[in-house]
Length: 317
Ligand SMILES: [Fe+2]
Image 1 (cartoon, rainbow, N blue to C red):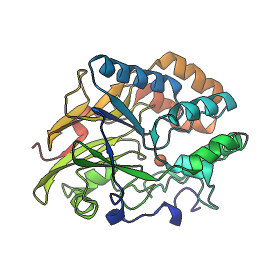
Image 2 (tube, protein in one colour):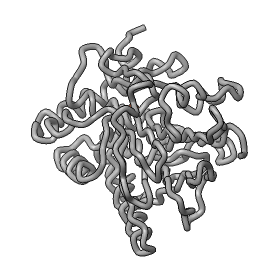
Image 3 (cartoon, protein in one colour):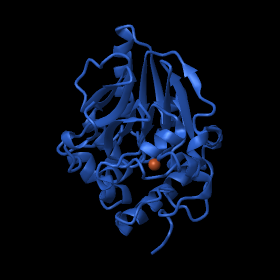
């Protein structure tokens, strides 16, 4: 089996103990953590509208993009639009942006897919990445901006440490905060990563299915949240994306899952983007039989097998 798309480049790795060493204080009222936009401009339109609605209620919203905002946007126009819009905000890298800015020999898509992901899916992702790298080559100004982004961010928000990363606390493309990892853990949560990072909340993405977990670790409430995908369907029979909202206040829209812990409300909010417009653009970029159509079109249309009740892990405290 080819290792391309399975392996994790050395540059992806980091030490959990160091992730919150240089935490930066932010004074906004609300954080939107946007992982996995996957090049969908209509989802970005909707997220901006959601932030505007919060602003009308007097809440200042910070948009924090934690990677993989590029993927399906394989045209010059859409590549420029997505990156120019996203880079106005607080941004850290996903493996997609890392491989656009610093292509690693043999990394393929840089997804570090685990063994349960089919080899055909991995091969198609590697080819999607090659096509996107071909587009990115024509935009060195954006490549330069991507190359300057950090791999993670630790924000001090309301006195708490919010660690925003792409994979898990050991790798940019780690699968340790994947839905599948929580299922396999049988209730043994990611406590050790809270002990090692000191974070109160760890917000991840990359693995494309949502998770909301909470528990007491070393006498403090901790939350791990994975928004799945902001730009693609996440749940059975649904077409909406999801983002993570973190605030002292509760959201006004109904979340897919939400909890209150450590004085914060952490919720997974639906992103109800213009589906027909996005599907038309997707089909034009990735027609029937193309790698992205084969891997993703069914999910874009019909969602996953996951129900909202299956998103929540840990204690109900
Ligand atoms: Fe990723």
